[in-house]
Image (cartoon, rainbow, N blue to C red; front, side, top):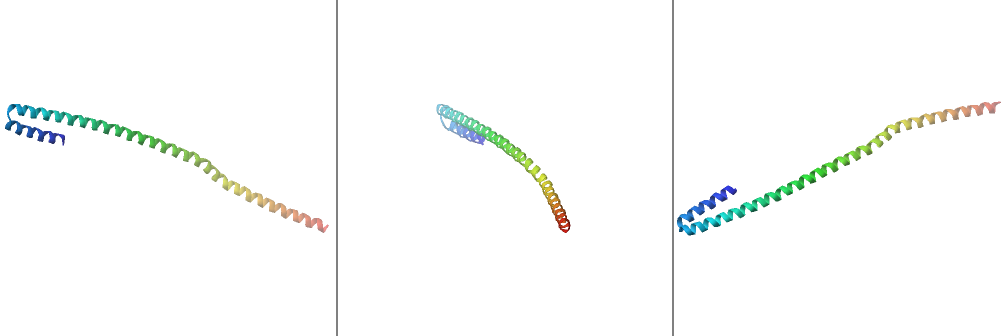
Length: 120
């Protein structure tokens, strides 16, 4: 696009230079060169600003990725004890059931012993 603008300006300058006296053509050409120089400087400034914005966005993305990884590690670290508790839960339930069976058996034996003692 810059080349097209430059081409149009050069073409316009050439037409003007043919129509104008040599002094006027030199002045017009000098003005065009100054305009081109300003345009190039503005484009370089815009490019530098775009590069700075790109670096900032990349930095933010890296920070977000690191934060995401940190949170994932925290979730994994929190999940491990939970998994461990869930593994132990069936063991505890089974132990409680066994204890209840043992208690029931002991109560039954106690009741039988009391009956035998009462019958004596």
